[in-house]
Image 1 (spheres, rainbow, N blue to C red):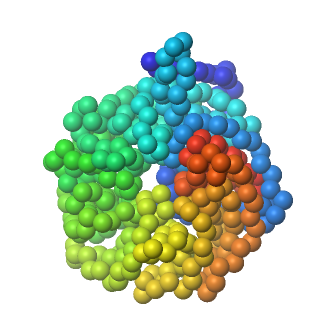
Image 2 (image 1 turned 90 degrees about the horizontal axis):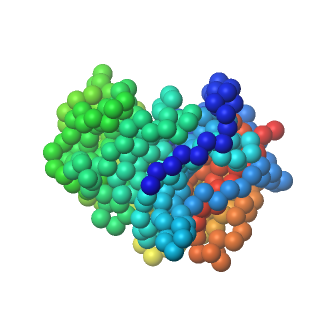
Image 3 (image 1 turned 90 degrees about the vertical axis):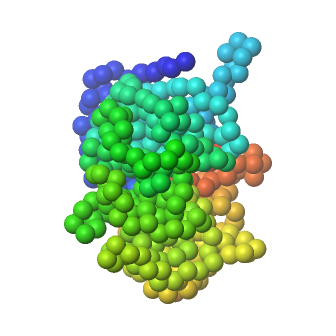
Length: 405
């Protein structure tokens, strides 16, 4: 069962796609893969009098919104009745960012799982959209029409296994002509145009949750992968292992800061193909709650021991927290223009200062107010693009909030 629903004419689709803006959000953790955008034309005080442009239920899931110009790409799972049968399916949506109306929808079968819905965030590359389901369905779609360019199942093709508890959770990463995934010993690469395997690293192993991050190291494009073996640095083009840091507890996405890699609860210094741990702390988080690093301070959701979840500010030179702010269960954040954009677990959207000495809220608003009753949460990082913030709940509520001046 596969279907595509086109709701706009080809002429309208073409005209809408030529409206370009530099403040787009093409992939998980934004344009630089670090949770930070350069966008500055937005109003941090807008939540004092919030304007919600639209709301839409897109189905259960955990992937963030991807934005190009006036198109929003997002995924969700639903169970619908077809006669006497329950049909379970994933939907990949292209929505109009001004109205929330569907431009197109691509649907394919997908079973339910605990905390139902896609875990991965799609990635947009030119006129192609790539999306990975929890069961390993990797689709390359035409971003303008939703038409399938290629599809393969990572599990059925014996390329990778999903996480034993949650299936495939990581988002793909684009580097040149390659689509990178944290599978095997130290990663895997597919040809982004065809889906064909370019290189892999041996064993048919569990694909870990964090998304690969590509950076320049020793004159070559290098991918930082969190795999079953810990942190692996590999040459993106060939898959050649440059260095491996064995630690089976790593959870968050790598954050590259020059020759150092921040891993939420530790800082590594990479020199001469070796990693030296500069410090470790006892802050624990999840991949959905990877922090942002601004001016040598990390702003990071997490918890310590039996303490409740809180937002922490960490001096990345020492690993010591300078403050922590209780924020309730779950939650996530991004950063723009030296500000934090935070969503707490119960649907409160907050704008705060990136301030290393104390927590300073600028504005806030409860965008979702029914989460406790429905026993769903917000744990997906917000998206900021073109003066709009997009947030979602695990139960499928998606909201677009205007934060323009």
